[in-house]
Image (tube, rainbow, N blue to C red; front, top):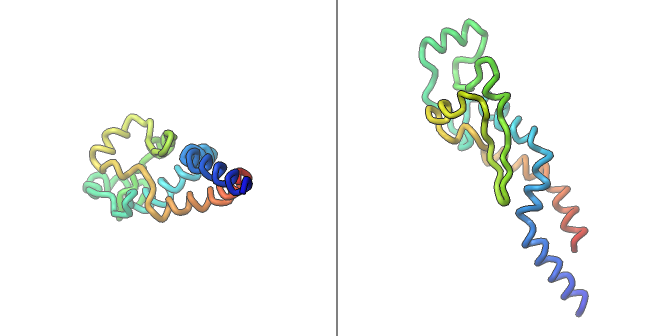
Length: 143
């Protein structure tokens, strides 16, 4: 009976600390999180909801992008790369949020919406899969 009480107590501690544990385990994966946002979403012209980034580029921007050999059939929010290179992840006690430090960040967010930052459900699932082995191992050790 004592073993069961100990397991229940350990499970209670794991449950209480789970959010912080997940955040702690996520921190080393910041580059992967950023890469998913940029390469798997923005470069493909989609936001965190999986929808196309709108509004589309204006004719002048399309002309400039063609001259540079950049895609014009979707909004990638990439010209010289400064914006994408400034991406960071803020880790809170129960969340993480992607943001950019580039001076254009606020303007781009106002124009294209807050969902240019963040992960689609599919990409969030990829992050979960990255964490799963470490999380399971941690929980196993606690129990």
